[in-house]
Image 1 (spheres, helix red, strand yellow):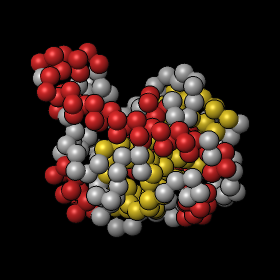
Image 2 (image 1 turned 135 degrees about the vertical axis):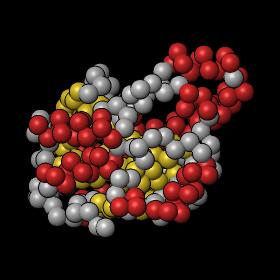
Image 3 (image 1 turned 180 degrees about the vertical axis):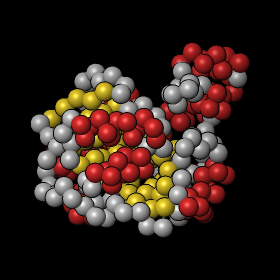
Image 4 (image 1 turned 180 degrees about the horizontal axis):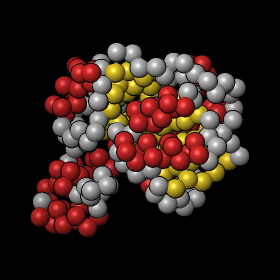
Length: 251
């Protein structure tokens, strides 16, 4: 059984492989591991998940960083979502469950190497930059973390009746406001444009400490992902029937 893994950012890609994969492309990083570099956002993640399936994947995984919505989570903490909350659902409350057997196997395995936090992972269609907005989302959804890609991948898995899993490490804590430089540096693909970022810093040098702090948090998340990447072969060496019924939305 081939596991297809979707990552959104180049920094997340490097936690799994040194191979050069173009955005929108995919490559095998092991005999049964197929990795796609999607770019940020749900549309890119959906396209990457569909590509992986055309290349032979029969189960899907979302891998990368997330924002904390729970105050108990700190940068570098590992999350293993047991439910995903769709931002486009009725009142933002459509939920997708992950493959329970695979989730249990993975939690038991990774708990030997890290503290694994389980709970709901919420979807956002754009970067949630303020602590206030993150706290409001937590109050509304009950989710412990937030990202922009996992629900789109889970939706593709549901369409094909394939198992799905989301492994995410926390990059920014709930009490942190993202530096404005990040928001002003995004291009139309949701990626940070280095030229825009440098220009904004020239005009707003007071943003630099916040960027350094965020960089340290992001490095903590990448370090966690790298540390568990070495166990992916065992995570995916688990017999699952292609059919799984627990991705049905729960309204």
